[in-house]
Image 1 (cartoon, helix red, strand yellow):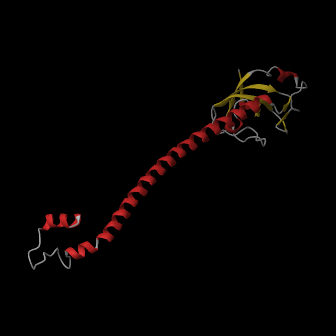
Image 2: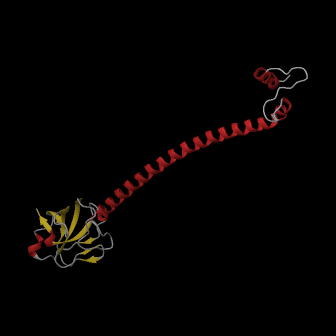
Image 3: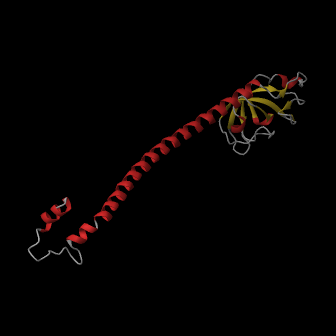
Length: 191
């Protein structure tokens, strides 16, 4: 007797002479023995499914770790770009400075100032007056009448628009600290 027969005999008892104990509608010991290969295939498929499920779980954990690494690398790249932009703004001024400013405005050069917003009256940034000459050039754009060149030292409202867009930036946040911007005299509070 095989192991299956022993287990079946224990479960349902042994057959009497000339009689066969039934196992339900059209199920017999012989039919049960013949289904053994199919059952072993089902067991193999079930084991393979469990193995694949475990592998998928491991792959998912790896992907989650890789996703976290990508997020961290993206943050690092954004920080590096901000640092690079800041150092470029400080190291390569794009303002042609001259000494032909009108005498009353020369006293403002080098003074700290607050940059006032247009729609929302209030301080949107802090800076320092760099040039007051009406012939100065900022980011390849001539200085507008009634404007000073200001070096940004601190941006308070990054979404505030520039007094004059110059192709370099359109908001204070895009320009960032260390950048040169044009700002109207009437929108500056000199300290």
